[in-house]
Image 1 (cartoon, rainbow, N blue to C red):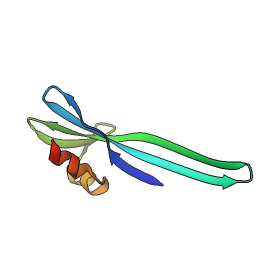
Image 2 (image 1 turned 90 degrees about the vertical axis):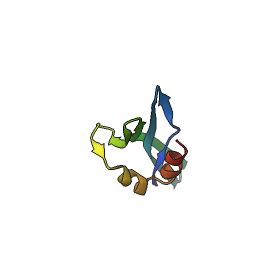
Image 3 (image 1 turned 135 degrees about the vertical axis):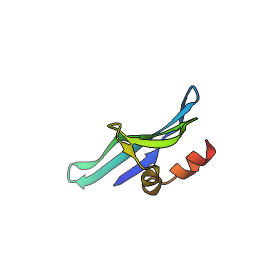
Length: 82
């Protein structure tokens, strides 16, 4: 299973950051037992400043905010509260 989610916003001065992450979950049953493997990795950040709202990927490359809004459930609701 792959899922992307927005994390809790972080405030630094008059700038708010919304970290974005991808979660991978794999599980399996075998004769030896059951195992679950879960990892999280950062994928980007939404930046809200007095100059506007924009998004970048983890490498700092600009990403259209609409792209993340389409891909990440709940991001729009978080941004509406800020």
